[in-house]
Image (cartoon, rainbow, N blue to C red; front, side, top):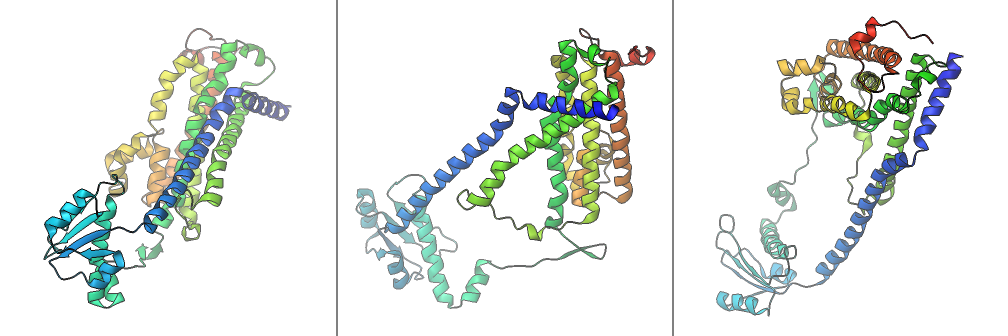
Length: 409
């Protein structure tokens, strides 16, 4: 019977939420916004590509003087430049608009600037002049060196293949950092997206003044657990809705949208950090869920819940104020405090887990702390909901709730 009641509560809470028009407006707002941004980037990219092609096809007319002797005739012809006999006359031609630009290459271009004079064609197009002058020097220098390999070395275009070791074993570096950090992203998204649902899940019946009627047919534990499971399912639906436009855009329009090509095969999925990250995510979610549901059971209105909800959520972001210490000196006192303080522990521990500074003992302590306190928070939420169900106009006294007898069901 209890299992039947639980499934009934989960079903009722889930469909009650997803059938609301404002839920879909809020849920679809972000994907629609992402789709609009993608569309604008796509259109802008097409326009930029067209403009770039037009610029490539348009020949830049310019003259130059070279006091360094580096610029060769072949390079000048390649870029479409003509050597000027009189710098003053060349500048006058630019002012008159008869030529696009005039470049005056100094005797020592490595230490002296190239003087560039050009017709103003807009803040973005004007950069073409500097680019052409620079490329003329680079191309001429490459011809003087006469070796492609030496030219590559001089430009610093050198590829490296690095391998680092930790405790005598090869470490994954940045490729091992990214996967555990995904748990942190999931934690933030789940709590922030579902926080309001967690609080309102117990407030709504109180504000509608039907809680005591519900408790005559349902056990408070079954009701709270059912609400939590329903909120979790709603969150998964929201995450899926948010992910669809991003995945579609990446898979089918990556080049047009200028998105980076991520090679997932290089990511290092180390079992230890991945397992610790998963447990920290679940434990932190249970703790924040229980706490937010308990807040909803204590306060009579959503307005009063906001005064407690804000500081609680803010604690999730506090560890980022000491991110430099978390990375460089995880043994610092403030980092240790944030590691074990319940409401900053999930984020701090997940950061340290990703950077490889969370030891096995520390991970065990934090995970145990989160799960124990999380389940205690849920039990407290059930208790407070039982006694706060008829506190419609005032905040429930937590101390007073433990001094009263259980209401007769």
